[in-house]
Length: 229
Image (cartoon, rainbow, N blue to C red; front, side, top):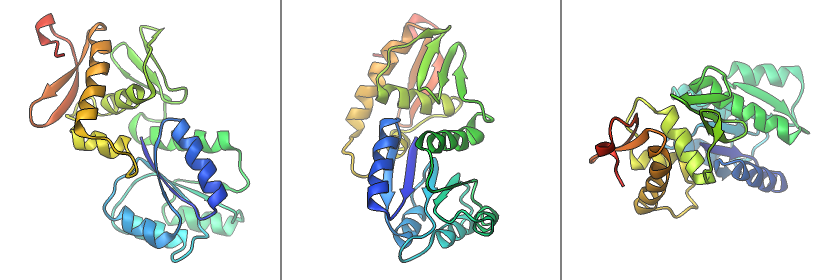
């Protein structure tokens, strides 16, 4: 999942970026409101963590402009402005959640996961494809209750495929959701990671089907002849 962190406190920014990255997110960071607003006019994210007291443009205005463009990306406001008036203003402008500083890191990450789940799995921490179940909180994947040995990148790929199970997922969409602009990942790298995950899923009766010229589709393996390597 791809996350945008908008925070001008450099120490807090660095700490949150490390924490979210360790939790499996592709994290982009902006330190002022004007840059964040321009970025959000063309770049999609799965969730946004937004400070209010930003230079150049405050978080309220960033949020207001985001919603005026019809963008429904979940937004969690993270700010030192903890009074009721500011909380109400932020929520009325379209924020999905509001957490005051200082905060507990575990609670922040739990709230972020909840916002993402709310839009894709009805609020449940678990998403599934047949007997394949992923706990988006623990990042653990199980098949018929047996844990699977997957790398962090494979877990991120599988999460995207399960969430888009009825749709073809393009290489561009994979790059968009799993990589920050600072990461150098080519389409060939995507193919290598998909191939590794495919081999692990094939033995479970699940395939990542290549749709030529379009991308990939998660599907139940119909026969041995369907296996792609």
